[in-house]
View 1 (cartoon, one colour):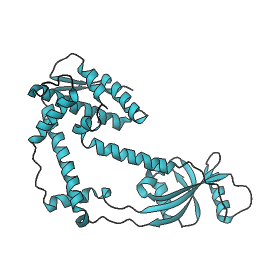
View 2: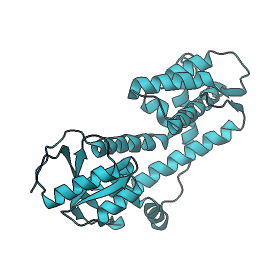
View 3: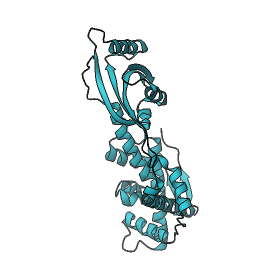
View 4: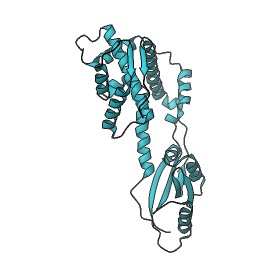
Length: 290
């Protein structure tokens, strides 16, 4: 068997880390009203700067000043600029917090906290939450929620595979030529490195290489090198092994699912409650500067 030097670079591993970060970000976005409490000062600078601008107390302006500061604090926290989806979420976070802050001022909860916006927001949120009532959590409702969110609980099919990383441009011809050498054990120097991937779920492979690539890899013959076109070019890969996914059991996870349903339902109720209060304000949103 022809041996290739193992390289340290691992784009799918990097993608998996990005997926984990993205999942954490998506989980965070589900509860916009608690962002200020959960992440402390992440948006405090935005709140402080925008709040310092004089204007109509019934008008809320989401503009370039919000975007500029949101981008900066995001970059300071994550080392990169937010993408469009993340910037939209940051705008939503700021808007929800601004509404809560103004509601808190109207309710007089700023007593002793006139310059501490996060405390005012938290007090307003607490008062708002006290009036919310969780709907009955009967088994039918929770089970339906479980079925809609199965991806969170099911164990996906996983794949072990290798990639021979060719030096230079990865054209269809060069990758297929490399695959032929690897499968036949043809003599001669092979200028390529080896990347090894263990236990990668389908979604992770799709994220790294594309849907068509993932399907072709999963359908390939185990132990044989193949040339597959991915979203960023041709690659030489070999499927080593795979394990079938397993469906989660609602009965064994009911306690966990019930808590998740409770958290998600309360988060939605709080968001809906703030949306109702937002109707009191004239909200102006400027396009994102490009």
